[in-house]
Image (cartoon, rainbow, N blue to C red; front, side, top):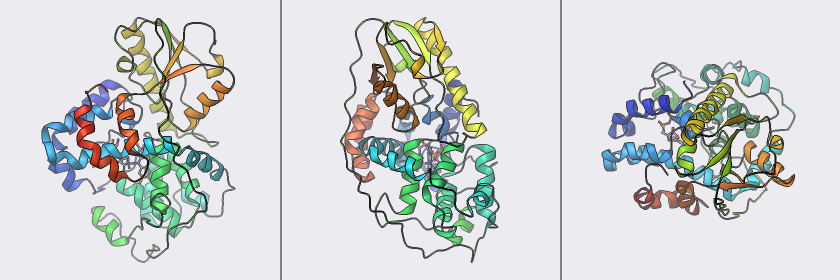
Length: 379
Ligand SMILES: Cc1cc2nc3c(=O)[nH]c(=O)nc-3n(C[C@H](O)[C@H](O)[C@H](O)COP(=O)(O)OP(=O)(O)OC[C@H]3O[C@@H](n4cnc5c(N)ncnc54)[C@H](O)[C@@H]3O)c2cc1C
């Protein structure tokens, strides 16, 4: 996985011919790490915005309705992001929950030593490749929660730290969805027959899974805070804080923008435990690629900072791409509390979609045609 925009665009071009019926018909099959032609494996690039959601949608456009499945999967990412922005207390509750002591069985689960062959294989695949197929992510989370009876937040912490596409919103909310906490009372139970059917016969965990467990329940009620307001871009020369959430600064700011400096913030730790090697390397590489492009595009000097506290508040106004809820937002909130003023610029793609992401996915799905009509490729 080469963490550059060029590599992401090459992967997008190579996968584009499959975005229509081929994707809809075969996407649920997980034939193993060496056999991923049925899905795009673009998520690490999209998560860091080396490639934009709008660019995926534009590549799918020639297929019209046949690409509806692919495009709606892309919108799931947008939906989860918007939903978490509107329900920030979910992230806070997750960070508290993942700090719980590790129960018996936890270490065996993350080491892939449970004795359930499929689960153990996915635990290894996750750590060794930084990627799991979507169906495997669902089965893995479900077995973690309902068969191994481990706390969902500890599983979410494990995958978040190891996915090269580790995304606070998609990861946290997908785990909650599997658990039956996102759509209350509606959980996802991994079934042996389904696993056997969709893994090219590689696994058959018959008799090993709890296929009758009830959904998890919780007392907490998370309020919809609405879509937060985006800042206006200051007039005149600015300094850009480049971060892991948006590695395409060339389209975040107008071509004529005058940049005094590009300040590169390293990837944030994803939790108290270390980030996986592959995930860490991908995020680092994505930032290095973005920094080189930004410096050349805006003819601006590039400087690495260790933390936001290293940035001098005096000087040209600071701007940054919207830091989405998660470790990055926590860092920006902390810096703001310490007196650093930074304008958060949101991409039109997010601003248009998030008003539809307050409840279930259905509302956003209904809005998809209008959103796609409104989206220029570089949004
Ligand atoms: C428990 C669990 C945890 C997950 N954690 C993450 C995570 O940390 N980061 C992450 O990016 N995705 C996460 N997902 C969503 C999804 O599994 C991945 O985005 C997808 O598998 C990436 O593979 P791909 O690029 O080959 O997807 P494709 O099938 O080729 O889909 C194209 C694009 O659509 C988006 N997409 C597809 N499916 C989903 C989905 N269900 N939710 C959100 N976006 C989707 C991705 O950007 C993806 O690149 C999680 C899902 C589950 C069930």
